[in-house]
Image 1: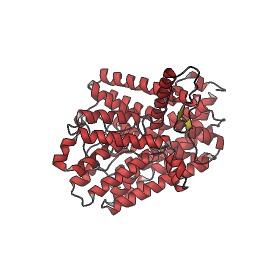
Image 2: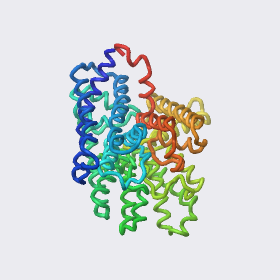
Image 3: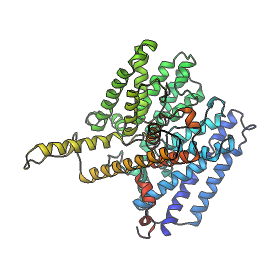
Image 4: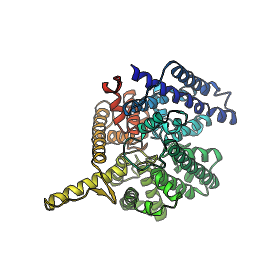
Length: 491
């Protein structure tokens, strides 16, 4: 019981901080004079609920020292609670069921980008801004922002580990607070740079801000149903430049922020020796080449430059888990071969220490190194001792075990989700597979037809919403939440 009280105390701290951000759309609503049709209570009520519940939990409960298990429990409950509250503006402002509003909120906070909303251009600007803001908040993980208000350094360290427990990696700074500050300075700088470039290229200020919030965060929520393809369809003069800008910042969002920190410090050797970065770039180039060849027939109608650009755009979009599109990937525009390439990219995702979801490039590289080492050991002499390493990075047993553990958890979760959505719904095997991979990998696009997606039942939407949160936390914290040991005193 004491463990539960401690978890709820830290949840209260996060809710107090969250209430401030929940009130942010009020300014947008007033700016665009929406307060008559969409009253301010739509945003004020959720903010007041968040503030009231948070204050009650902090004042009535006491914290105890955090443990890894408790921090993961706070992580899971935090994502669920913020999604429940973040769904209220959609539910109050739009004529939709609360489950649909919850699906939209979960998709936003987890930066998945799947949506049940259509005719986006007709929605209030404040709702579109809230959609974009949820993805920006979730880009680095909701706790990396709210941990600024957690006073205890030990608790801050444990809670940050709840969202970054998956892979041992270098830090920006010895102190957690310093690391948080560096992360958000890089993230904020990318956001501002992206917004200014998009505005200079012809987007309206509102569209530029919304896409700046959802591009470096690799979220993928757009202000238009056609996503980034809208700007070319609308005949915008600099639509090609917009596509390249979005592409560049999707790549940046999917790349480890440690790379950018080393670039800012001019540590060129650390960047050039980074094995994950080399694998990441090679993966994108190889998959782009495969897509260009597989769909080469499109070059006759749109030209080679557009075909190469669109192929690279979609590969980077799916690999970084941003999910922006120029063409709907569920349509026949993409060949079967291209869809298979994109499905593999959905599984892999981006780099460790980035805003991207997925299994992560680093883990794929680790498993590849383990396989290569095993084959060399079988073929070599029994007396020969071969080091197990990735590039110049020596792989330790704990790191390998953690990678294998997450890989098994992902495989089991994907298989169960695939079976459940196939047997319990109206989706065929291919569509349900892409749907669960998209949800767990926090991608957004999938091979479910838009007309079918809009009519999915409560069961499928609930499964996908749960899968989004589990995928964002990378499965293990969700499993730990249901362990009785987590709630025992002294655990």
